[in-house]
Length: 345
Image (cartoon, rainbow, N blue to C red; front, side, top):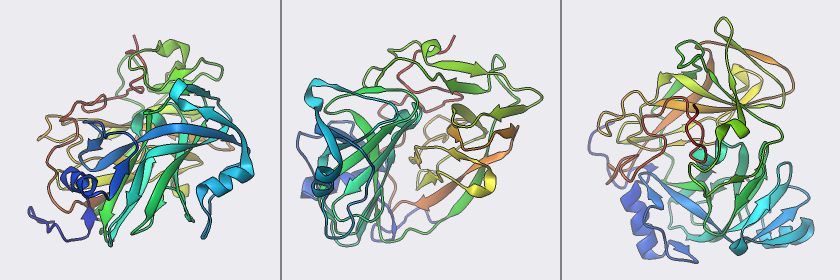
């Protein structure tokens, strides 16, 4: 890839292109956009005023809108302007503030934010007439919604809470490289390899940074002989063995599941923005934090074992700012819980 990509080439749109879409009305919002909402290669999405507890997840399908399907499965409505607790084990659909009128040739894909995945909250984007979660078709015009399913902890959310993010792209960007990601179980600080979520913890306030005692929600994990046994149905926070670097002209997505690497799901939050872990951002050595949920059978992880893969794609041009320029809780990270928790000590 050259140092001067063409703005018209297929690729992920950087922050200045997202700003242009907002200015042109291709991306709109019920409330004014926040100053830090546009990331180097993605846009944070914000909860709207209403959510519904539903009895089942769904896809609208061609010719049907999300509100039409909500009417079929809704149990009760929640007012998010006053704040609401979304309970673990339940499924909710919420309005998002951002609407889209994508120009020809531009499509989008959503993923949970890092802070959402690290507390084991499963979220997916919905649009009218959609036949797949998280993917927004080229030229889509309409509102956006989010499905929220807390798995380990109940969460407190409100209007403006950010749970997922949108990456916009022009055309079909080529896959520049695919890199394996191993798990760190040997070179450990204080012998801790990771954390397992406590099943009967309290509520996580998704807008309260550094506001929770981690020991009320997590228990530390100490591997034996460089191995860690994953129990079925449990949720784990681990770290990558390799440092992760996202070049300034690229963006990456971690594949959410690969059956060839084991009976578990890795990494709910798939987007890595340009500049993560780079020398330009003064963040060399940043690790990837892995959100792991084991499936039906116990699984024995070994130090360095491949647990996920990073897929790199080009940007259409160099972003005006890099990951961490506006401040980040996860740049230069090692093993790290979500921003909602105080530092483990």
